[in-house]
Length: 262
Length: 173
Image: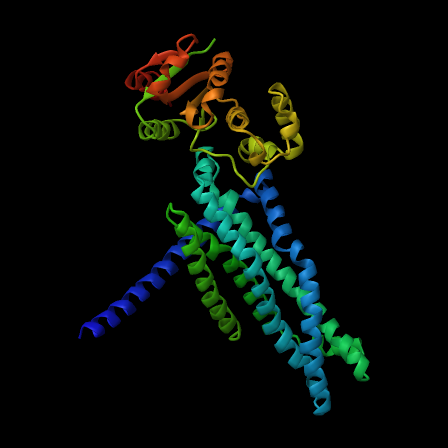
């Protein structure tokens, strides 16, 4: 009886936690968007400088890793898939398969994972330490809104980096795949690109944008929100790091699944 | 010369309460605070920390604000620290940078909260000389009562907390 009570209690507590996170995170996102966009803070030199710096950190510094990953994964995915399809006599389906595998799934997934590993972890620690060191209170004392100066540029930079890097990944992985194919089969880059472009529909573009924009937004907002939930102790930053990554993982899966319905 | 007040408090808690009251009563552009619990931003350089209020509130670009910051740092012989991060500065230099950040928007009042928490005791005499020499702002030092003796030969007028609140806080708009 007691174990049954504990079981129901734990499920209830988990549901309340998830609902609390959902409500708290939604409120946080609304505040970030309202104070960042409607407050026309983007034209503010201080906010602009932080945004550019964050784009450099989240996007530009990942450029070399992304190039390498795209070419290698492109060779494995595009090369392998195209070769199999040609051998099976389904040469005409290359465009459709590449579109589904690369643009709809692999690009948001791989780019998102790289950004989570590099940007989200850094954001969580950075904002957590800013809170712990009272730097956020310092900003508020100077009448500087942390939503506009700290959170909004970081979320915006995550979205921009995600969309640009995912597009870059799509293009490079197709080129990487073609490089492998060109050694083994008589096919041209032109023919592969034509097939891909011919097969692109509004739904594919919508799904790509839905996934990249939303994942980019979550990669920026969930770590910041989780870091802000941490209390005053140093160990709370580590706890929030763990929670943040788990939340991000589930959010990632949900967005990937929802994107398939578009 | 503008007024100089010394408000002595028994502990950090009382000082923090006063600091909160100042923040609630005044904007940063009216009364700026140099406090041990309002740190510099560790991700920014000295120059960026000082120019932040100008960049954000006055919408001044880096190109416009940097010469102003450089000139102010030069006055304190710290021009070489322009692009340093705060970890390369000593405690007294950090206090100076906090002070410069505070005066960037030309406030009427500058309030130092518990300066002994920001600087080592051997530099405390330098601080009292520095604070005593400031003439452009109304200066208030909120300090632990044990340090009241360090202000005996200065222009600071020791004031009770209640009197200071009546004089300064209740005149806020």
